Length: 550
Image 1 (tube, rainbow, N blue to C red):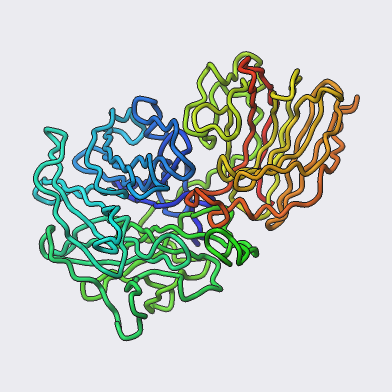
Image 2 (cartoon, helix red, strand yellow):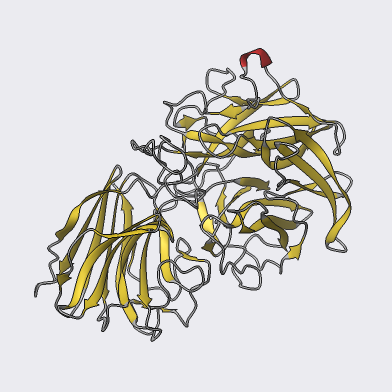
């Protein structure tokens, strides 16, 4: 059986294609670098991470973007031997006038190299490229409206793209505008003479859903699928998939989907979803009062679809239409070859010459000036740069939280000389929210270890500084539900680690979409990092880094 989520942890806004026997899913990466994750499968069940298409600074410069800005909602398509990837770079979001720059890169091979980006238009975010039967290509996207009040709650525009001149051509035309129902994340596909406009509806929280419209002409007019409209509340979207009315099912926030047809003629839909913790925001919260907290962020799930009267419907094993996310298992797809399950990446002993693909850094690449796997074979050397609030030059790599029951551990050597030099193990959501177990220096006690909590820019040390002797130290995080516990261990002569608790148990649920005052589109990450606020580039050496689910 295929178990949801198929991509666990922060993997939102999935876009899926099939090329012969191979399936590919692209997902958003926001402020994390490199840009756009692509996973490959041959059976829709087992997925492996492959190269990032946006892996050069000439393609992607995220310096200065805020939390949850950066690369939004990539759309991956394929036409006549060429792969196309369109995406948005959001540079201004917490304001009235958004800056949303839309780009296109192409490649003859999914593994690259991918081209330099072509600037498209800046109407809004979530662009998608549609390849029509006659060879013409169209870009569809939502439109942001800075006016007060907005003229429409939601608007979708379509504009033709000229692949020869590599530019937009003709006038952008509204193909959807509504006073009540807000649509975004549009994709267009064609079947049996109909153009289908597949759109996310109603934001990205627990009211999220997926709507579908169709037309006989790509320019419209489009009609919306509205099953039994008398059952829908005023202003509510006519979602073909949503979990908004089913708060007890395990996968919430269902929406923002894309479709794919197998060789055997079966149809599937991938969509984002999220798994709730047992904690909620207080009623006094600045945003999302009383909302449930979702630490892993928005993930990717898959559903089977069927067609009824030329309308797509989500389908369950009882052959009945559903409007909620089904149970954790769905039917095995027909006509696809099995793929060997990918071994989970857990422990990294840093024996390779390049970092594992699972790691990402914040906004900028970790190149040889800031990180090295060669200077001390079997160790990762990281050179300290800016502080953890920097949006320009951090030395930090991280992996996704994929389970509410997990552990993380690293061993490092670091000999700081001043209090402005730090290195350690971090559990973070963004630059404003994290738990940081780190080694530093104190004028009175010398080398020491402490635990820092940073919640919406409020700093608090959760333990006294504990003096340390010179030499290696191991750091550890244990997560049970939302309860985080941190430990450290100094090696004895027989190299046995005896971990000691530092600080008390911590409610880590503030590392969540709903709890953060700025970013709310990514997910919790576990990383290792170094800071040197003196500017001298003090380094730390990491022997291993392990993250595993229980």
